[in-house]
Amino acid sequence: MSEKRKYKKRYCKYCEAKVDYIDYKDVASLKYSLSERYKIMPRRLTGNCKRHQDMVTIAIKQARAAALVPYTVSRKVVAGAPFEEIR
Ligand SMILES: [Zn+2]
Image 1: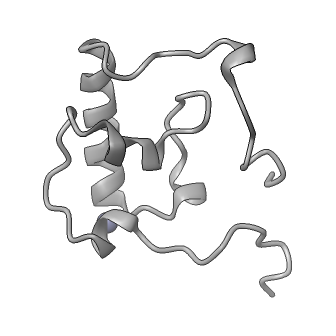
Image 2: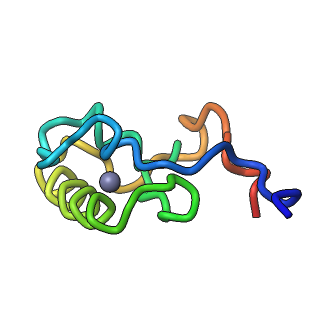
């Protein structure tokens, strides 16, 4: 049944850490939901719950506008692609 599932258990990291509010200035916690190219990770990969995913999405967009998180990263900067093999 879970044969196809390559990524680990799904749980919401923010729920686990009991986060009620995600601050856009807290880049470290935003990074949980960003890919190595600073794209917002879909919920199916991160396992975030809807509530936190929405918060994170808003926070990331604010952080981008405030230039705390880049919109895009050039190919050279990308080190690894941990989520490449899912799909
Ligand atoms: Zn959550």
